[in-house]
Image 1 (cartoon, one colour):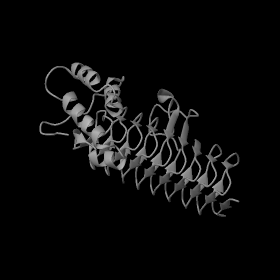
Image 2 (cartoon, one colour):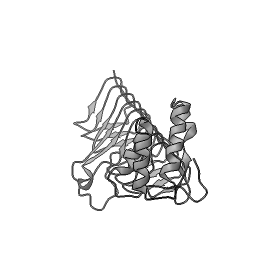
Image 3 (tube, rainbow, N blue to C red):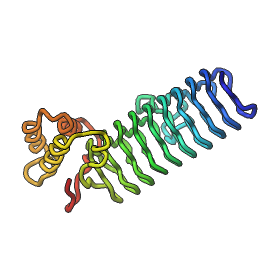
Length: 266
């Protein structure tokens, strides 16, 4: 049985699952779907064509599903889809998609969005992602599984963030970040591999050794990037994490690849 505080406003048409808790002064729009076990603690605003997955908890003053900050948006019925078991902390903002980006912003499962994070229109965030306090995503950003975006960081529109990567705090990320990479800086540069994250995820020593080898070869000075990718693909074609990096770099993108600075090493 759901618990809805008498001061909450639930508009006609909203779909509320079982065991949902809606606290004081929350507002839920007519096209919102809250799955079983969702908790809105208090003062949460959820609107638009927004669905929130089971057991997700939303903290006070979060703004979820309200119109995107895009002058090209004209009220089209775009969506925001949020997966299961997420934690959305205070003052987080999440916007729906737009006509120019597929009409969808999507959030995976088991993610943590700390205080003040912003997820702009048409972003695609996969499972187990963490955005630390006040991290900001421009429109059309893609973040793959297990990535961590450090506090006060900003990610440029259309940037891709690969799996298991780490963005250092207060970084400005203008270019795509390879899977397993670690970047930092005012205009972020690769600083090596996210070794601590790889160990936490259970990668063995041999896999990490191959990733280090591939990193040095890919970002060496000799030859072109495509030539170096071909060399790595030939040498380490049976190492799945390495081939994931190769395929990520080869994939079509509107942004360049984030590369190491002069003194950076894996």
